[in-house]
Image (cartoon, rainbow, N blue to C red; front, side, top):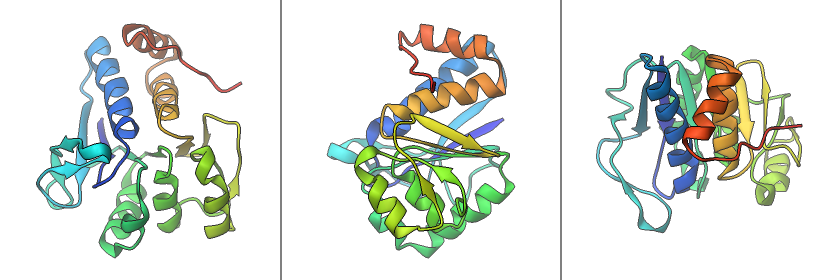
Length: 192
């Protein structure tokens, strides 16, 4: 399974590093064939929030097929204005078996037309803006994450870790997700 995390300038650091840690730890503990990697629009370093520099593994031009696509949040407004990014998300999501967003990554999925008519969530501070910008969405509060079909959205920042553990539970087993959380010394906040 190829697990791709889309990153861009001003992405929120824990939005991408949290899921990366979850999936790479789950892979190590399962000794499976998962490949976990970052994809950016172009080759070269990405400067995330607070000047955190990240080298993506792949660009749009050279990444392998993607089974699980995770789109992260941060200062996402410039990404919404890039047709190449929105088209890539739409096309990649169409071929992937699962698609997820962390935090304001939901704006990018919505702009790509992937969330129309669905119940979704995002960072608490951005929920009203998401609902106003995309009125076909049912944006809810007080959920760390929620899934509908192959699409999953999560609240902000650390909620992406909880969502990623839920995806591990679905893809491998709930026991393996608990083991992954224990290995990370992380208290998994499950949706009630």
